[in-house]
Length: 256
Image 1 (cartoon, rainbow, N blue to C red):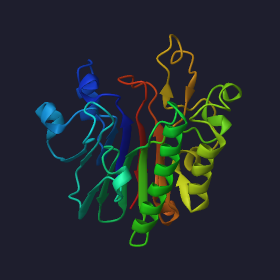
Image 2: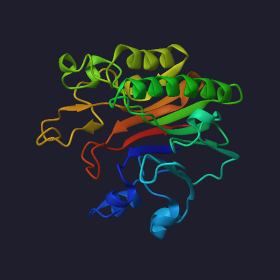
Image 3: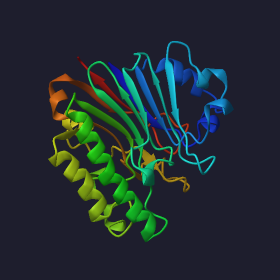
């Protein structure tokens, strides 16, 4: 099973760029998860709202148009779907889609960015905690695959200049601690599990001039799987050459 995750930073904007439709068609994804779509399905062309061969699922914010949003295109018909975390304080953000598939629970998540102010950082950390509770509840019935933009680099190897960002949201100890705690609960960072400590492997680059060319980036997009799927891990990769967004796609193959 071939899974791909991509923060497109505006699905309509990405689709308008030459080559995006070709990349989409050539991805060969069984499940394609998109974050920061910034659009409702009725605002999208048919190729995105209802692509051939896929079921299309969208979660959009209810209170703030043109903000966040996630989408999943899946070839397999899900047994059940959930949109958003099941608590009121997290329910209007357009940040999560859960599909129960035959072999595992699939979660596509666009985690909050904590950079704006301390209140937003508290919101991000609270969302992390609520998400883990939700994922662990699902895990009681079958394994879990979670992907998306986590908005945090886990280790120093996961960003180009860790010495500059120790007091910056996205690399704060408490944010990194969530990812360490996730691993401590038995979730595997699939890219590191299969590829080891390769350096210079990033998924997001600032739009500042030259940052992407110099590979001055962060690895903040992930596929995690619960340890029950360890034996199914086949391949994990990053596609930095795909430049339709300030992020790039990441992928995972499972041999189920």
